[in-house]
Every structure is written in structure tokens, then in C-alpha cells.
Image 1 (cartoon, rainbow, N blue to C red):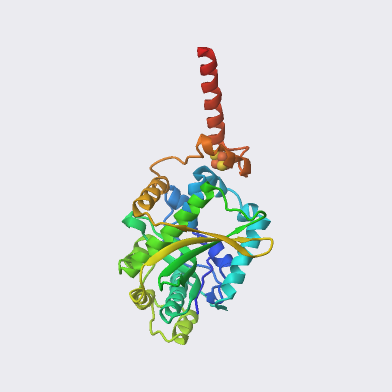
Image 2 (cartoon, rainbow, N blue to C red; image 1 turned 60 degrees about the vertical axis):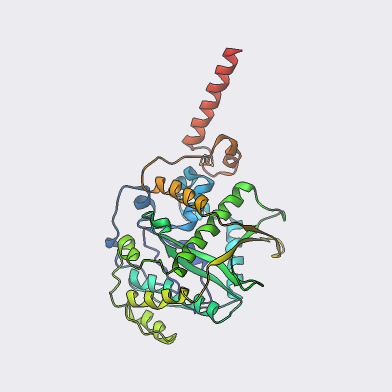
Length: 346
Ligand code: SF4
């Protein structure tokens, strides 16, 4: 059984984790956070837009177009949600329900919410260790490469492959044609599974730092969890009162597992719900380190957001913010200037 949390009032609004990820066997939480004053309001994009930590999907959206991601924070979530995205979410839920049930748990504090996430990890790891062929929708956290920013994500699937290796799978849906997405999209998919692997492997190596939750999220690790969460903790046979002890019990489980060996994206058609292609990626740690470092320069306020390169200007045609985008306007003006100079020289 996994546990999920719902902090709709949090600056780090995990709406997609909450509403997309009602995992069977997970606990979903239905109350609001009472500790929001603990989260500092700051001046970096991380603090302004996300509060205290990033979602892995922030990094992948940023890899598509950083400027677009920034604009997206200025509109309500519903505006960004297309029918295709909703269908994709539903398909994820169907896949999830194939492997476990959902259970709701009320949370009162932020510590409760994170406890629920760790209980979901506990559930997934227990299944993998006991030989279940696959688990789905497992939360994962960490501070990649010790770069000073905390990440949170949800892995779609981890399965044992026919070589008894752990394979990490991300599900993507295609709306119409049964074709692979563009290489630009596939690059974001590679980035996503690579970050997940890095975070998972860090925990398997015993390098996940519990203190990072205190430092970044300002959680009180020794605070007693609420009775509803503790009831669930007891139900699954754990003896803990607080997040600190709970994390010990969960993190030790990683040590019984191996590193992720394979990274895969599986593509499913939204028309017939059939998986029609998959793509595997080699893990390149140095490439990932550069990608994360470059992304974090923005989140830490060390540089302004940037839009797409001129060769990726085709992305703007599908962008909700095309009309107001100052980056696009600037690129357009530079192109005109360049062309005029060329004509003048001729
Ligand atoms: Fe990015 Fe182009 Fe959209 Fe501007 S119009 S936000 S550059 S995709």
C-alpha cells in the first residue's frame, strides 16, 4: 500500500501528484497544510514559483522551453490542461490501478504529507524486494549532484526485466499517429528517466540525506505524525512516530535493491490504448550533470529565463504564449536586423 498527499494550498502545489496520482494502495490525503508559514518567501525563481523544491517535471518542461515554463506559472492550471493531457492522466491511472489499490489518508501537517510519500516508497520497495514483477507510481526524492536544490518526482514504473535487472519505465501517450515524438521531446524524456535513475541509485547507494528535508523543506523530522497517518503506519506493520524514524525504515529498504540498469520510455496510443513503441536510453552521468547544472542556474536566479533557439522556433507554433512572448519577439527582431545587414552588404 502506498500513501499520497494533497496539499492544495502549498506554494509547491503538487497538483499533478495529487490529482493524477491517486494510486491504488496509496493513501491520498485530503486536508490542507498548516505549516505554510515555515516556507520562506524569497527572490529566486525557485522560491517565487515553487517555494522550496522542484518537481522533476519542472526540469523537463524547462528543457522544452524555459520561457514557456515561466509563462505557465502566470496562468491557472486548467488553462494549460488540454483534453489530450487529461486522457493521458486517465490512462496513467488505469495502468496504476492494474497493480495496486488506492486508500485515502487524511493529513494535517506538511510532515504528514511527506510521511505519506515515504509510505508509498515503502510499499513499492517492499513489493520489488518480495519479487513482484513491477511497481508503479513510486515517489522519489533527492538533491541531484549535491547542487543545493531538492527534487521530487514520481516514477511511472520499475520492473524486473528478463535479466533480473531493474528497468525504469516512463509511460508517454500519443494523441493521433502511432509515431515516435520529435527528437526534442525525446530528449526531455531521456532527461526525465535519467534524473529518476540518479535519484533512485543515490538512495540505493545509501547516500540520500534525511537532513535535506529539514534544510530545504523545513520539515520538523521529530514532530509526531497525526493519528490518521500513524494508524496507517501501524497497519502496515511499522513502528514509528515521526518522519525521522519513518525515513530510516524506508531508506534501509533501498539497500536490498540494485541500481537501475535500463531506462525506457514506452509510447501508447490514445486512440486504441495499445503500446506501440518503446525507446531505451543510455545513462550518461556527465550529460545529466551538465543539464541539471544549466537548469539550476535559472532556478537559483543566476540568469534570466531563455526561450527556444532559432532552429527550434517551430515549438512556438504550438505555444499558448506565442503572442505575448518577449523572447520570440526579440528573436524575430534580431532576424530582421541580420537579414537587413545581409541585404545592405549585397
Ligand atoms: Fe518559448 Fe516560443 Fe513559447 Fe516563447 S513562444 S515561450 S520562445 S515556445
